Length: 204
Image (tube, rainbow, N blue to C red; front, side, top):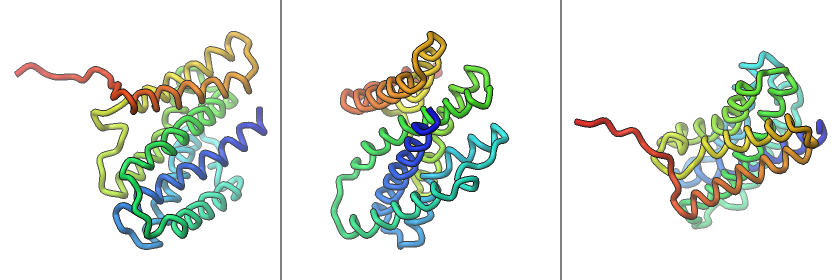
C-alpha cells in the first residue's frame, strides 16, 4: 500500500500542476505567474493536510514531489503555450487529480490514526484545497463553492467508500482503486448530466 500511495501521490501532484498551468494560461500569465499557480495547485492540499495532522510536510520531507510539480509545470507551459484550448479542458484532469489526492489524503490520515470521519475530511481537504488556491490565484470563484456539479461531495463519497471497504476487510489497495473510481465516476457523471446538490434558499 505504501508504494501505491507514493506513486498515486506523485501522479496527483503532476495532474494538479497541469490544471494549474491550464487555468493560469487562460489568464495570460507569464512564466513566473504560471509556475506559482501550478506549484501551489499541486502542493497546496497535501500541505494543509500535513499541517493539520502534525506530520512532516510531504514535499519538504521528499523533494521528489517538488521536482515533479516544477517539471510538469514547465513542460505543460512549453507544450501548451500559444494553443487555443477549450475553457473547460482543465476540468477533466482536475477530476482525476481530485480522485487521486482524496484517496491519498484519506489513507495517510488513517495511517496516522485519525478517526474515520476525520480521515475522510482530511481526504477531502487534500483533494480540494489545491484547486481552491488555483482558482483564487486566477481571480475566479473556486469550483467547490460554485453552484455547480458535484465536487467536494464526490470526493467525500469516495473517501467514505475507501474507509468502509477497508473496515469490511477488503485489501487497502483494492479499496483505494475503488475509492478513486467512485470519485472520478461521480465527478464525470455530474459534469456530463449537470447533477448538483440541493441549494439553500431562504424565504423572503
